[in-house]
Length: 410
Image (tube, rainbow, N blue to C red; front, side, top):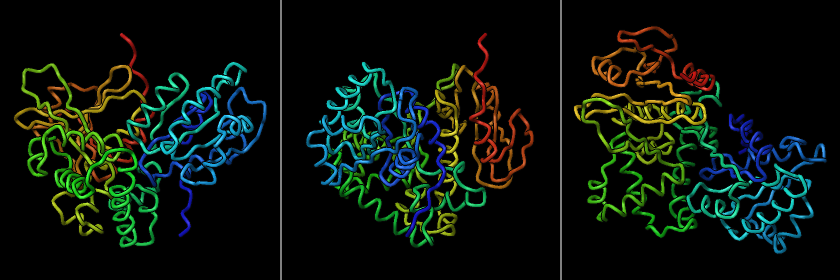
């Protein structure tokens, strides 16, 4: 099947980073589209042009470090990469050849001394703390980091939002010719991750144990983290189950949303909430293959909540801090965004076509006192609600967030 190239909102940011840093690491789960995006930039003449480049339009060089022929070219890495210094070099799956980081440091330092300050290497890899640590130790001050997530609603046409929710944002899943084909792709993706990719990154965790853990998280989508309960169910200790969670968070497969700390005279929950970041993977772990199956399952509400939260957090300006607000009595706000400069937005998510402001929400808003409050619902009309909140559609608020100006200093 030929997979069309979809526009990615990260492309302009990635190109900007390549004008600022000698190396840029593009991290994210496998099959999320890192290679497609990197090759599109590398293959467009001048597309990753750094200001110091003397060559006006030179296409990039792509090296797949899972390809033995490409690895062979790097047997004398310093010599080979020195011969292509006028090209952006894309190094895919770099965690397979970790010694390259030291080589890149020497090459980059030589080029900086020659006045070539940016746009030399684009490094791709599965998001992991191991990769970040390796690159950070040898390329500190020379590398910028970006994470490529699955597709979100800014990258599709509005009519496809439900399909994106059900299938998730991995391009091959979203673009599959049928729901059955999409579900098959996701089942194989999960199996490959468990049996091949995670062991390759270092952790020695039995695939079946990690699948059970991942599935337990799916059943408790959007719930408070309960390490002791999960540990008992898996027959491991609390530290071990925390290590499992850390791994899936590092791989950008799970989001750990921290609680908001407000100066209120109420007892607030201290545990984070846990969400599977891709709704399609969530549905597959629960055996839900199409829209009817999703809508008929108790997870439908929290699945949509997680889907909306991912879109909102990704759309928020750089430097935004995301959290949730919840008291011990259950008064809650799904998402609190502390935007750069100080303003706070409180956002409640509803899946239905009717938007309302409950008494509990009004109490929570009185606690948090945000500058703006929204109830994101399934409709498209924007209108005020009692208590100071506004009803708004998901696409409208996602389009609104990136344009938020920094709050003026006092």
